[in-house]
Structure formats: C-alpha cells, structure tokens
Length: 114
Image (cartoon, rainbow, N blue to C red):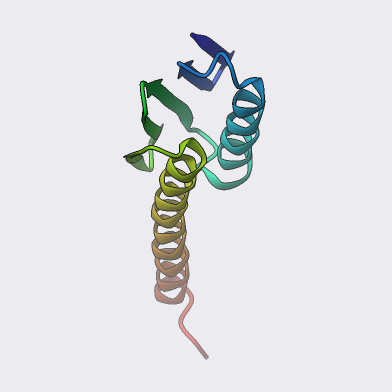
C-alpha cells in the first residue's frame, strides 16, 4: 500500500506496487483538483485499489460548502481514474455555477439597478 499525505489531502493506493507511474499520475490529478478546483477550506481523500483484474476508485472532497464524492470500477485503471475525476469535476462545476448565480442574485437584491 502506498499513501501520500498532506495536511488536507490523503491518497491511498493498493495493488499498484508494480506501477509507480500510476501513483505519480494520481497524485498530480488529486493535487490539481484540491488546489485549483475544490473549495479553499476542503479536505480531499482518494483511494484506488487493484485486486486481480478489477480496479476500484473513489474520491471525496469535504468542505463547509458540502461533500462531493465519486466512485467507479472497471478493469482499466486509467479509465477508472478518468471516470472518477470526470464525475467529481462535474459536481464541482455545478457547485461553482450555483454559487456564482447566488452571489450575483444576492448582489442585485442589495444594489438595485438605477
């Protein structure tokens, strides 16, 4: 088992000992999501496991804004990774759109047009 830890990030990898590039790949994606796309107060946990021919993956981002999570499974590890990160990005983008609309709606209520 390989694990990466940062104050707000935890990554667990099981069954990928024969593929060190996979660990680097996952760490890069998790860092990108956490530092560039997730809420600033979030913690991120990701877990990927390979057992025989099956790969399972999950990511959870928790913050005051809410919890965002995604899971996937399949036989191709990189495909599972893409499914998980595509779903988590979809959730984060939906949250950003709602937040943006709310901020602009709230401002127009406080600052009526002349």
